[in-house]
Amino acid sequence: MAQSPRVGTLVRVTNVGNGVYRVDLDGRSELVYVAGPPGDVWAAWNGQVFRGDLPAERARSGAGAHGAYSLTAPMPATVLKLHVATGDQVRKGDVIMVLEAMKMELPLRAANDALVAAVHCREGEMVAADLTLVELEYV
Image (cartoon, rainbow, N blue to C red; front, side):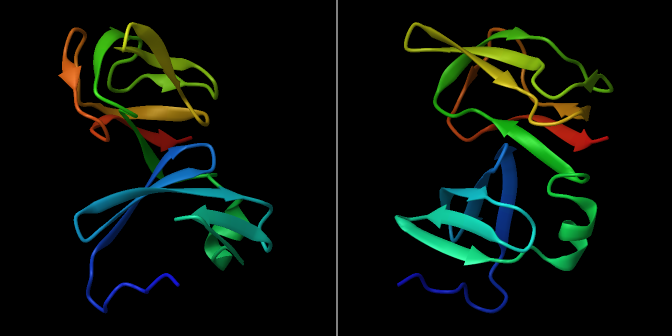
């Protein structure tokens, strides 16, 4: 059975893709997959499935309608091509950058229409897994 974090424990949740969140807690980083409409949300974490409701504020706005999220490296890789700069607007599905890992090219795409708030990497740079590469704000 999963334990709840202690009171005062910092939990950081980062949207890393459509329905995928990275949860950082006590020096650990884990992925949580979320699906379903507001009012009937299912989350898969650590081999378990949880069912619940979105907070009222998020349900009113529509899942992912505004706020910020970041793109992170899914594995150690090299930034092959960067297609955006700070201040650019992107559309859902646009390729933000292309990483190269294990002789494969991996395009990272925008999960929603967004504004590029910050770029934390450059072409040719080697990046570690889970490193924040680009911060985006929903538009």
